[in-house]
Each structure stands twice: as structure tokens, then as C-alpha cells.
Length: 111
Image (tube, rainbow, N blue to C red):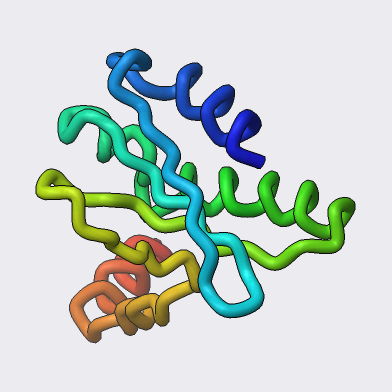
């Protein structure tokens, strides 16, 4: 799993020599803590966490095949573990039509 994470990260970040994957044990699972250059943190997380979600999904497939449990954390600049939420967050509701917009639409259909 560590080799897989390093391979994926080396192809994402701009400073591959600064990648570090630390493996530790926590109760019944392995914990992989990813440390990268602070400049590359945004690349690893991705927009709305999509990249780290994809990395975790790939790791999940490997873990299933190996019949293991795991967790992947990201370390911030000072080296502390930082769990990145990958679950879908509630999105803001779509704005409702205002009367002004409805009036414009109604006006445009009149002849």
C-alpha cells in the first residue's frame, strides 16, 4: 500500500523528492500519513477534495484484496495529522426564481 501511495503522489506533486509516507498501527487498522511539500498540499487534496478521494478509493480496492483496514491522513506543514473529510457535504440549495427573473421571461415571450 505504501508503494502505491508513493507512486500516485510522485505523479501528482511538483516536489516528488519531499514525499514521505509514514505507516503506523492503530487498533485494528493501518494508518498511512502522507507528508508533502506545503506547496503541493493543494494538488494532493484537489478541488473539493476530489484528488484525495480518488487516492483513498484506489487504496480501498487494494485493502479489500488484502483483507485489511486502513486510514489515510495528510500531515500539515508542522507535521501534525490532518484528517481531510471526503464525504459529500451538503450543497447549498439552488436559488429560487425571483419575480424579476420571471417578469423578464414573461416579457420576452410577449409579442
